[in-house]
Length: 153
Length: 87
Image (cartoon, rainbow over all chains, first blue to last red):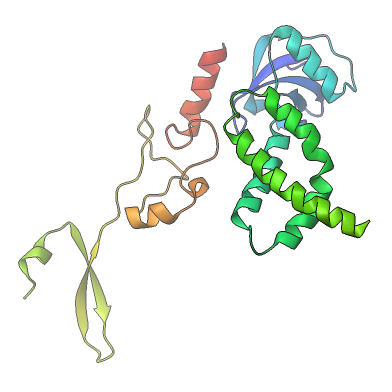
């Protein structure tokens, strides 16, 4: 039933209802999956096999799995990066007066990353409302950060 | 003698022992009933049932399980739903 490349749906867990591909067989009862969920070991009882079997080699990487799924018409959204940005934006909003110094240190590390992330944010449609808020906080922080950067240099 | 409002069974009775070695009755309000599955009617697990003042102060993750149809369907019925949608 569960061969290499079998398309399945997850039945149980937080990520129930998401589609995945069998990437490796571990046991009679355990299987490695990848796809809309992250790469992990899964019990066979928590999967419902569909009709399709994709052609996949062993040791396939995460990006190749996403490409194969796109051919079938299943799109995968990247959620992890947005959650981190939302957390930093909320933290910056709530803790404005007190830990400006700590925020500067944190933002120094994340200064390089948000530039690339803002581009991705503009691409996404449903989270347009969240984007301006995050951008405004980032702009204010960058202004303060540039001053700190110049002094440190 | 208890006053008229205390004779109703919508308040529950708690026997309290006082420091003077006497027992008295105190009246407390009852909790609401537990949530049930929409399909099969089984009692749902992981769903809190408290009075409004407590529920409002609780975090969202503590009031329902964090999976699709959490708080509405039990785990068995949820699996059948997902199977039926895809097969």
